[in-house]
Amino acid sequence: MIDRKHHKVVFSFFISLLMSCIMSLVISIFNVGFVSNIVSIWLSAWAFAFVIAFPAIIIVSPLVHKLTSLVLKEETSH
Image (cartoon, rainbow, N blue to C red; front, top):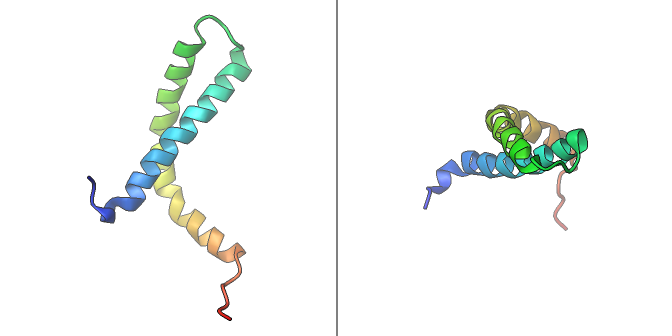
């Protein structure tokens, strides 16, 4: 198992893997339809998308955390 101190990197890996998978499939089908070689088109698109998505999430996630904190109310204890 991976040490918990690597939580952000592991989370970024899995979220980029799954989101690039879903988005590349949807966009591939949207662009070319259900053609006979859709699986190879999608896998190629997924590989490219993941290579971009993983470092992008690593770089952008601190900004997203700050923006999220700005728009959410602070919790009040009662």
